[in-house]
Length: 412
Image (cartoon, rainbow, N blue to C red):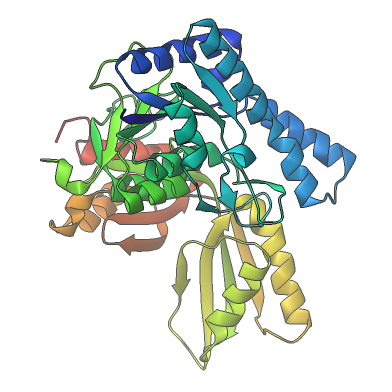
């Protein structure tokens, strides 16, 4: 039988009533003739509660025990979903990551999937099981320890199963009814997209859109897994939600597909750094070793053999970055005059595969921001995106103005 993967996020399984609602959706697909692999998250708020228990018990915790604890929320949901389906006379059973087994690296709390053998599940499907309810977010290392894939890892679990089993589609059920041109909470004109290309979704996810985890989109693009984002709380049709697919499957689209933002950004500038080969490697190697995620980077023109280096980073990593650079300076590994920090900025980006073939997007974006009195601090571009760093107080204005300027409320 054809295989369908259905993933239900924490809000979709937040209580028993919602688990029953989700189970009914699964039953509909079984009735259509699918063997279904259901990937479930922990019930809403459960993982945060478990993380809190760990922090309170052991601030400098053993990462292996951390994974054993925080993965347990998904196990509860998987068991409850399987029981609910059984009550509906749907042959179902729950699977924990180690039972599949979903094999991962040993990087606890941020493990990466290495292999998903299909033998165990396929054997049970052959014996009459119609639904395998798999606990998301978790796997097992070569050492036989439970691992977790990082926050949002259930999305990645779902796409990986769809790739491994050659699923017809991977449906991601969440609390929104699809992917929008921007955040509807900020821009009332935001429009739900019927389709979006993998590359566009990947950029939007990495630039702040919270609908899908970035790693899950990377996997889907690599293995050509059709992804559909749907709401758990609305009646569905075959055309519901947003399909994330190959660019070739989209007949016509706007030049810009969406506007993304990341509210909590910071800007750091190292003043008067030696302008010589290897200096960037020293700076960003130090930040990488400290676990700092650097994004936008700008190096100023050299003057008298010195230069300034500016970059953006999440606000919650500012202290870590500052400490690492100060220690590097104290040890003599780096000489700079001053570290200037601005924690009151946000990143706004426009994304679209149409930008490859149409010029003038950057000029239009900068003109719109200029007309609104928004000063641009840093600019970065790729083939299908333009990002700017601006004062945080202008973020919502910038998103709304760009959405209007590129007429994203209109279908392509």
